[in-house]
Amino acid sequence: MTQEEMLLEAAQTEIMNLRNLERVLAREEEVKKRAIIHKAVYSGPQIKYVSKDGKILFIAVDSSS
Image 1: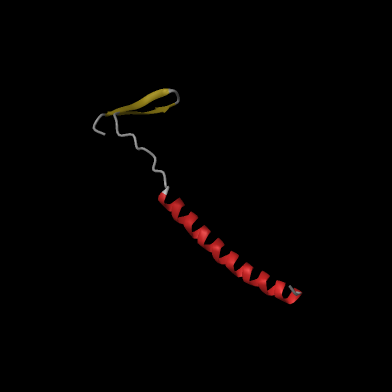
Image 2: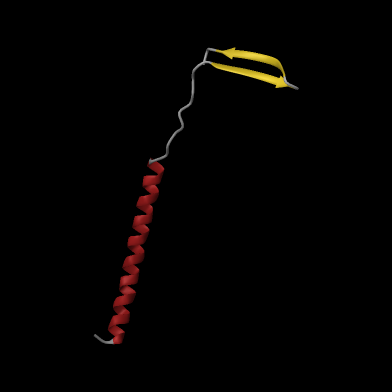
């Protein structure tokens, strides 16, 4: 195999590798989009309070959630 033939084959291989890489990256991106994890939202009763200078100013009990 001459050097010119080897260079031609290397160029063709590079093009094929780039196409394969693009396909793999696109597939990985699709998998990432499908694998989005949603945080669970707490919907039970909650107690909220506001304090200032160590004194509790307001307490709210929300059991409707």
